[in-house]
Image (cartoon, rainbow, N blue to C red; front, side, top):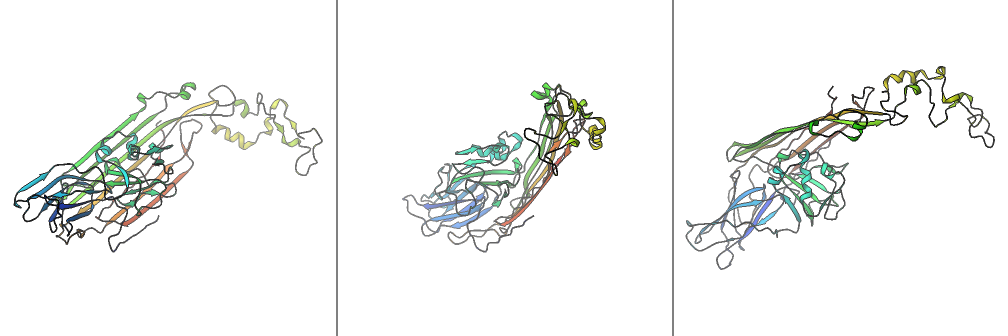
Length: 480
């Protein structure tokens, strides 16, 4: 297990999932309006920030959690201007210019125009896969990473849609991208894949950055995947679900039919719940999610097993000649070379039959552990069904976020609540059977390898969030 700790003493460019709102305040003639009060409100959590425009009429709000916001501008001698439903997306800076009209400050103006689609604040090109798509799209296994293929220029490679992260983004090298979750590294460095598959209901949205990625992102010869987790709001939202599959509607396999075997077993139960909301309204919020996955899968296997006659030493019909090792007269260690034209100095067993008194006692003992053929022939003569599977559990939580209202500050100075000094911690444990072999009955599963992986990271990023995911998978014995 490795732990990485980073502390910043001053605002620096960093890998984050936050967005920004910038803009310029002007009057009806297009002249800049300095000293205007600009107020920003998160419509989900009622978080409030304030700033003043500088001498050029510019303002900015940075480190904004993705969500919907309201911007209000007021200045003596001008009408109060409100711009609602401004959508801030992951790692995007959106420009909202405000045009004031002469009038009494008590008069209200509300602008409902949509935010511009073209981002002009930085050169990064990419595609944001929004929350509604993440939540509502039908996904095999609820694998959020399959949605990466929706971004322009993304070409899934072998196994990509199954969670391998093997994508080619805008001509880059496949499987050479990096993934971030809430601004923290989210990679299995050895395999260059995501650390694990996050719960679908835990992901708010993500951005696929394909061109001109900023210098804060390194170590990539492909694109960057930047995910944002959901946080609670002033309203409770949740989900309760279960997806169930079994063999009733499945067709049997070709090899099971060929061997006269029943339809292989299959059942999958993927279930979970998610809940987010306020602990203290307008102050403290939390989001929790759990998902369990139970899989039992039947496998049809075709193998070659020794026949009853072969177990007794009778290899009649086998094209290979079986020689008596005790009759070697030449060509062996310490023996003379074989004469020209003689390829072996050994004598074959008559009829390719090994006498019973020459059979190894250990081999005879192992015979009872080997299944007998159920098909004719000397090769590919055993077709069996056996079961394998796994149990997985994952819990994810966004640590309760406590926000305090920030006092107004000087022009273009970042407003930062007192509690913005947190980070992210992730820990994933994974145990899974990697391979199974049938026993003599063909119904049991023996574990040959166990793999373990531990990973943790911590980085100071901004608002205090703790995302903890824990999963355990283990092989399962088949249903009898």
